[in-house]
Image (tube, rainbow, N blue to C red; front, side):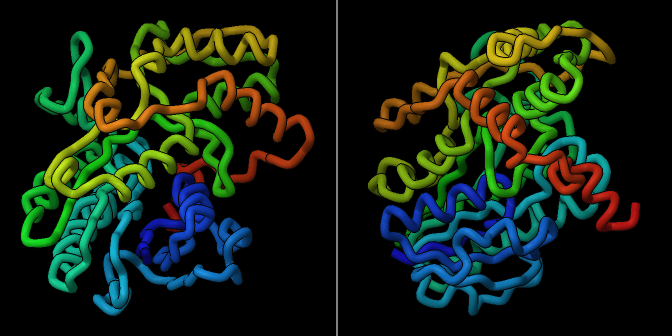
Length: 322
């Protein structure tokens, strides 16, 4: 099977691509390489890998030639960056993805997977599943939700469209992100001997390891269309719904650093059910402490260094001259 992966030079993409290649997939990668081409050095030149340097907003239908499935990861990757560049976020996270899905259907591509986010839930009470009414609080979340609403109805007539709402991701990647909560806390523990908790730490967030995200995408690619077509799935595990303070304690167990409080409470807070994807047969294999150990080890041995490009807002400001 040949898979087009947009945004393959990002945090998830640089983990997903080699994972799919090891499973025998051929990959065509479309990315504007804002984080550099070296983040794909582990797959460039490998058999079954093709790189197309292009902006997802402008990529022509020829990138879909010979493609069996699309995994659409191209996106402004988080809420703070979305607020920094709202127009660009709307163009990429919503308009470009709907355009790509429509082109894929017109070209006869069999499957399309939209990489969405659990942030569409915003603030919720209790444990919620995919039937809950979304409450997007940011441009990033609103753009992702609108993309879902236009991509999923395309399902049918030989075209299978599915949306995956990823939990907050953690763990090491070739295009590292040191601004995600688990990774950020691990970095501050390494640099300062302190783990910073914003607000009171009682806000809730579901978490998932980046390799488990790759596993979930591969799982959906291999699931019969009638079981996933036109549907949305939360990606994560029930036992990884954490309060922020609980995440800090996991980091403390690995690093021995001191927990400190600062700043204002993040309004986003939600606890998710993952029963729907679990019923299909998908389960995560990594735990938060695994990810902390991995990231902390890479920091300790000097393999991972806190470069500007591993901090999304900082890097976009630099690249876009903001």
